[in-house]
Image 1 (cartoon, rainbow, N blue to C red):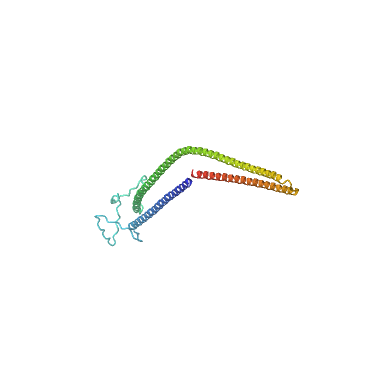
Image 2 (image 1 turned 30 degrees about the vertical axis):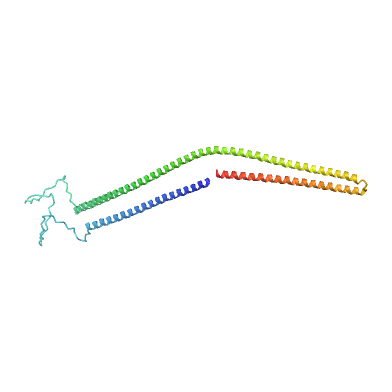
Length: 345
């Protein structure tokens, strides 16, 4: 019975452990799925925002940079306080523009010769056409690149802030998980300690009980041995007494039979004597008949003795069989009792 209870308890504990493991694994899988879905949603949102920003940037670029038509020159913006140019009349030549830093030429007098330049003086390089436009375009492109870099920096800052927030969230979640794991481990450790203490107490109690039970068992065994010895002695005495009684009975019967035989013989002898006295004058034929009768009687007596001996033998056999059966029954009862005691203990 105790073994069956232990097996049931062990099976229940195994089932509970398996159910706990499955629940924990299911929770982990659910949390993983939620995290994956969250990451996918965040990535989709980021992509949407990036696409919208790109579209806006492209629209701004298109508005700022309009395509020039063929043959069209870029119009210069009119400055404040600038007057409208007068229209040129027919046959009028275009005046040359004075360059910056250029001095007004003096009118040459009559008879004056052209001055020769010295060898050391080098010719000033003339500025090529379209250099100013190129510079302006370079400045404009540089400004646009700087603006683009600023936008990229701002976007990266925002993304970095978002990533930092996400990292913080992830770190907080990881810390929460670690705390849960620590709590769970603490609970498991406490539970194991309680179980160990309980088992130690149970073992100590069992040891004490087993020691007490061992002493009790020893006492019981001693008592049982004493009882068995007493029973065996009683049985032996009873059997010996029965055998003695049976032998006495048989001896008495034998004595009685002997007495009977003696009496019969005496009677026969007396009768014979009497008959001899009375019948002396009888013939020899009658004597022969008497002899035959004697023989018959003796034969009958011998047959009776043989029958009695056979009866005695049968009785002895029956008694032996009964004793054997009793011994076998006692042995079987003892075995059954031992088995029961072994099963219950």
